[in-house]
Length: 152
Image (tube, rainbow, N blue to C red; front, side, top):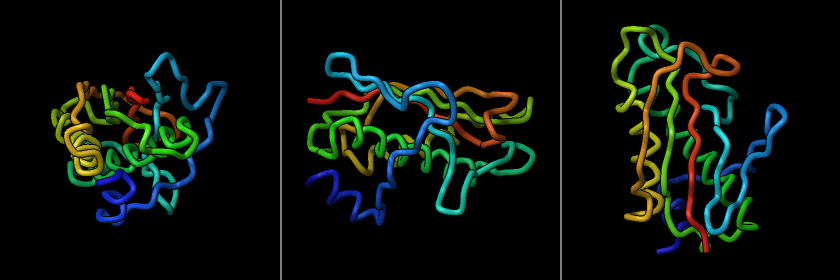
């Protein structure tokens, strides 16, 4: 089944790839790897802001992470000229969670992105990963995730 078909089954339409917010590029291609810059949590209503452990619970954080993964795939689609059949696999994610000092469920939050990529890509969505806490994130967002993807 194609990635587009899986996304349709999940009820997900990839947005246009978000533009960079500063002096960087949204992705770089080195060999057969696409390195995608950090994607911040946002949906159709705008930025998903807040601090895990104070403003948001784990479920809300996981949804914010899922939205980051959707933006990651949108960037990959842009990197391959719109042809997602060129995507081979997710290689690695690094997830940053805006959280209180005593919050310890960063992995559960970033599972929102990991679970989405597996649902969208099947086994090709399984990846290496880090999930770390941050005292704050750009624009006050709840989650930011960067990724590395293999392409053909």
